[in-house]
Picture (cartoon, rainbow, N blue to C red):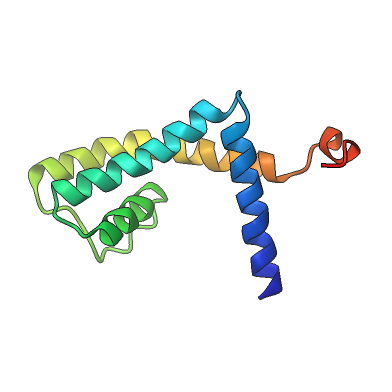
Length: 113
């Protein structure tokens, strides 16, 4: 259990570094905007609950695809195709950014951060 807490703390610190770093802020905001936009879309067009909307968004962008939810409308299906094509690349780049920020830079450790 302690190890899981450490992992979440490290992820949170890496996420904060990514959002506050001027060079990576754009990608971080784009990824978070895609997740937020997808959530709003599925909430309004497909009528999913807020929890189901964000759940479906994350499951879709991570290509897990459990199959328990799927869009029913034609607009939802077309949106999902383009959302996947754009969103998967952005999410992978964002996760790589988080991984890069979670690995301590030698300059960071020498500065006592």
